[in-house]
Length: 236
Image (cartoon, rainbow, N blue to C red):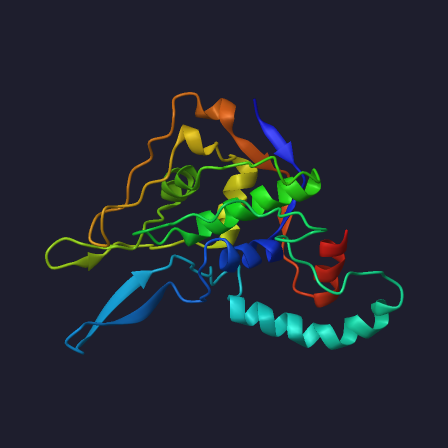
């Protein structure tokens, strides 16, 4: 049985990409320096997995700049006509937490799948005003199956000499399109695992046999780049 729920706003998705996936970057890769006891610096590269789509989607930085440029012309005009809270935090809405549990993407540039699933889970609970629904969608299905069908990989370095997998990571637009058109199964249908190390290949799709009957779809999604539109969406 296919379940459909109200549309998911992409701006909220970007928030979850930072809060739930615990990654805050506009680049697919970030270098982290780890200091050993002997004071030598060892650099390791971790693939975070967010890849802006040049032909369709501006980067996170570009969106912030667009929102900033629009804020001054909209905030003053609407502040007196629309009642909005001074702040909004899904972790504390009148004492209730609508955020689902934080998960670990481990050795795979799959953060977009985690962020998008978290956005849908949180939005579903908010729309039903029930923080205890505890939906748990399969990041593995979204990334390894639906993303894999679009050629997405973890972006790991495999082989000898190590060579980066092509099309590492993903972008929110592609993941949300798949959530709308195909739908995503529950976690039990395809529990998430990552490659054993950054030097192991992207895992294959291993979804359960009756997966078509276990998908959840969103009705639609949209991009909001104007501050007033974002505030109105959050307040509604």
